[in-house]
Image (cartoon, rainbow, N blue to C red; front, side, top):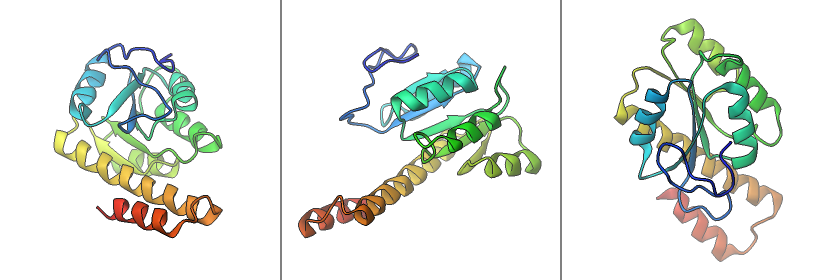
Length: 171
């Protein structure tokens, strides 16, 4: 498993949870080629960690707390849908947005994936522009949600800090 400061096996990039400079994307696919393609699409704008099956994805998500997960449906052992349901049932990972990236390009599987808790569904082969755009949109929505949660919890009360963070979100 990718540890706190271990090197990413495809990129050599070190990833750490606390104080990371870039959003961390977890790519989950059993095909190394897809992992490489997706990693190349997302870097250098995002840090990337990977898992090759559903149960490993859950472990990585719990330990690394990625900002977003790109998940395949068809994998050996635990499927992507089963992994998504498990992630959404776990208080530690329930709020991490999941986007399915899969060759299962039909309405039934899309519906099943969305009902499992995914925020989006991208058919393979993935388009660079579509993947980047959807990742950006869902990361932005997640930042907004976190800010509102912090406001509601009273974690941010200084009017200047609230104004600064709200302006950053609006950019």
